[in-house]
Length: 82
Image (cartoon, rainbow, N blue to C red; front, side):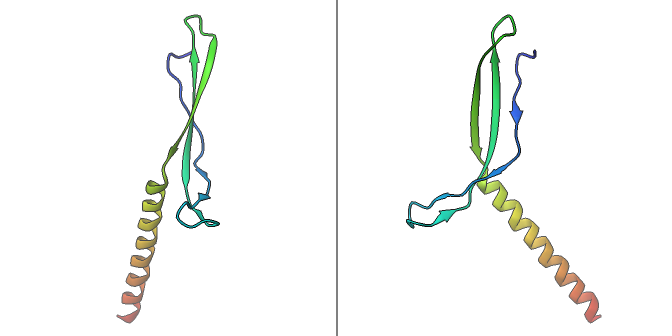
């Protein structure tokens, strides 16, 4: 088994309670990672599991995609007006 192995799982959307607005939720996206830790003989000792909040990156990608779509629509409109 390799000395270092990290399993990156699929992006997980998971909305959480909005602390500023009780009863409402806010969109969050998490990147779970699982890292097994082995001893010198290669026997599994334990597993470290963590989740990284990647909400800002996801929202930035979504905003860029929307901007690109608006730009494409605008270009189509300009071409149609010619």
